[in-house]
Amino acid sequence: MTRHDPDLSPIDELRANVAQPFERASAMPKSVYVSEDFARAEQTHIFAREWLCAGRADALQAPGDYMTMEIAGEPIIILRDREGQLRGMSNVCRHRMSTLLEGRGNTRSIVCPYHAWTYNLDGTLRGAPAMALNESFCKDQIALPQVRVADWLGWIMVTLNPDAPDPALVLKDVESLVGYLDMASYQEHFRQEFRWNTNWKVLAENFMESYHLPVCHAGTIGGTVDLLKMTCPEGFPAFNYHWIVKNESLPLSLAHPANTTLAGDQRRVTWLLSIYPSLLITLTPGYFWYLCLTPDGPDHVKVLYGGGMSADWCADPQAATHLAQLRALLDDVNVEDKGCVERVFRGLKAGLSAPGALSHLERPNYEFASWIAARMPEAGEKRQG
Image (cartoon, rainbow, N blue to C red):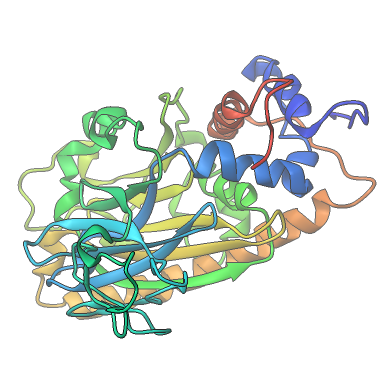
């Protein structure tokens, strides 16, 4: 077991943890999950710098369709403009700084709920009541600050970092692995948000390893996997992954019977992709589901959860029935996962607990810890925003 060193900061503890080779690796130190300082450092050095996912692009189909999110404390609007392009912009009025839109919806313009300053879908100011007597006011010079947005394989990716490399470049190896499934053609059929009492990394790590499936998910999907047939290869710089060869107990996880393009194991392999820092995707020939994680302090995580089916399963005459069965199954899986990750968080706060050695099936967790450590500031740098 790894013992806590009170003389080390959480960042230094994490660096010492990942300095060990994988064959001798232990779970991350408890301090990185519970420290307020570490949580602030993550916001500054990870969430304010990396590409984050807002969901699926097909959720914003018509001009004026919008969704909102928060990145490192920054309220953001993502919308489809009148030309059909995705846009990201500040969700804060340029007048008295009220937030503008909430949730999801469709709008012809962005109207501030405080003083009715009104913005076009490109963020430019259209109108501002009772401003004619202010000599410094110039409507044409006012617009909502723009934020970078990209459509990557059907995912809406957003970043506050103007210098972040394009996700298509950073994540090109994802296409090399799973491009044969044409992820962009999958259709989203459900999306919801919830908040769990755990650290965001506990939930991310839970997704990254399938070691827990036979036990935690004994009532749902545990019987569809065989630990002896599970592969956890070395990951890539921007993501880790593993795959499971599914049996026929869940037909929707297999290629549609009418599909003639997939052959051999392509018809039954389930991919689990963990796109750093917080986009988690389960991709099968028949369906997909995903989690997008937003930290809410060290002790809670906000979760965007969604999913749907591949194009050929969507075209099946029984698509609605298949979708209902999938949604019911995944809802039950979420209940099981919630119990697991909240129990882990309670346990890691206990005085007698300590992180233990990792299984070979938990290589993705080790790589995730190494990725986080590499983004934390060195000694002497400013460690929190």
